[in-house]
Amino acid sequence: MLDREEVFNYVNRKYDVKPDYPWQTYSNFAALRHKDSKKWFALVMNISQDKIGLNGTDEIDVLNLKVRQEFIGPLRKKEGFYKAYHMDTSNWISINLNEINSINHIKDLIAESFELTH
Image 1 (cartoon, rainbow, N blue to C red):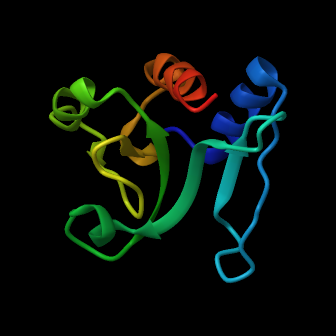
Image 2 (image 1 turned 180 degrees about the vertical axis):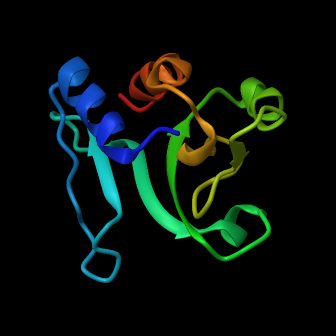
């Protein structure tokens, strides 16, 4: 199980980016942005499981990343990958961090999202 702090630590080491928390109402939703343009390349949210189609209402952390459209379908067939919650589902995915064992499994996807949003 991957937690949000591991994601934040990796992104800080790799891209020198720290999370910001732009919404008062959703104070635990963290945006990861490019330093120059301030565009998001990732968003970490705590949501209920049912928001991404899982059974139950327990709270989970999800990571939204932008990916190439041709990878959306194949990724969503893998464990832990879902239709993007609250984002354009043709360009973004939600990753349930509870279902990911290691940051190593998503490093390439973070890098791709960083590049696609630059």
